[in-house]
Image 1 (cartoon, one colour):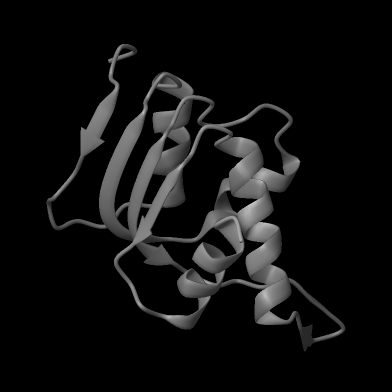
Image 2 (cartoon, helix red, strand yellow):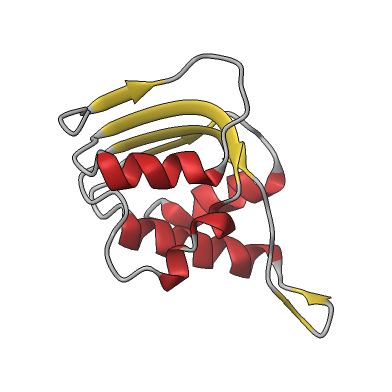
Length: 119
């Protein structure tokens, strides 16, 4: 399905970050993706990738984000700093993204959304 432009999954199942990586690998032209699942973006290894994962995506709707903040010497990273880093990585890997939606009202996805939106 390399010509897939819009994907909406509204089924109940567990999807891992690997499903997003496969989508990026085989459908880099995707422009819209809505999946009501919680994802751990840390598992995507975005900070280790030199090319954007979704260079054409404009709309992304997810159930939410799981927080796995990096820590040093067992001192947790501040939630706002982690959210800023996640938002910056999302901007790099999804340069055309203009509509970011999380169904979850948890603190971490809300902080990422706030950091992602221009002020």
